Image (tube, rainbow, N blue to C red; front, side):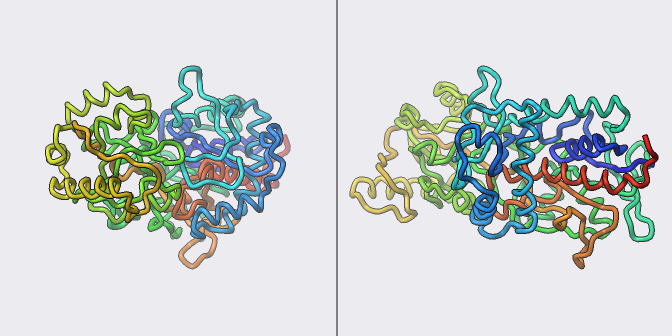
Length: 487
């Protein structure tokens, strides 16, 4: 018997276990992987909080928790859970300050207004500094969070207050008299505690669960960590927990499936930055029919992302010409050189080129007639100075200098939006909205939709995961303390 069971040693589970152990609780931690960290191994690690010491250090003194709350509800289109958003933003500056006190190395360009998603009204987003020579790589920076927390984890493991079970997957939850009192895990292993926290992450590596919770969606192409298979969601649902928000799912644009059919994308290196706030596009975006479907120049990134839901097979292509490749804003995958793009286009696996538009369309699997018609109309509007029907703005040049290119981009999954329904105390709720005694959840397992709605709100997945883990660690250690014998 331990005081607390934490299932999942990732962004939420690690701080939950550390904080509870520091308060004197004995914590058993199940982790499916052979190492701790989970999504911290692949995430950009963006954190956002209003009123953090980091903000004050760089002279940002006008940000407030209320302003952060209002920004999240605005960016989420009002679809985020206001109760959880309030809990998250209240705790966020304290979480960032906690990491600050632990020696976290902030990127010197942060806090910033991150332009890869719809923008906050204040510079409040931070992330870890990149290792020398890796400044251009946005993903994987969350490893800095893991490196900061690792010594605390090791200290509590050495003291015997955290008992880790690595390479041990959750099987089922144990319920007695209506309360969750422990877990069955692979091994076989049975653990019992008055409180169990599910922190197993999302389901971005489970095509079956993704399809179930996001009905009507295509084949999964994902950047998720390999253990993110929804085990906690399945186990919690089996004991009556309500699952919500899967229908709020949104796709991340710019991911490349380098090996078609693999279902994998690696945004740490194979990613095209499509944000018009960062790079003026010389390409157009077309669907399977060869038709444009979005304003490539808008700064309303959520609206751009959501247009993909209505496209055939939820995939699209960037179409551009040799002049664009030679230009200063070439649509290149992250860290790629122009010659590498040309070689890959000649190989014709995920990017193609041809002397004619019809030829490149045929190679890429796009309607040749549709693409030729689209480009002809696009070029004619530029020549005549006519307004773009999709709202594209600014000076454009025609797509006219062969060879022509088509780069395939799938509907990429960066996070999953569905998850366990929890209340403001992070208690798992049943279908009637009542807490399931002994069961809690934190991190992506509660769903990105809970704290971001239908959008990607900067820092509103990593920061709430860390914060909710800390909140539960404090609360459940305190709840267990009467049952613990004096030290």
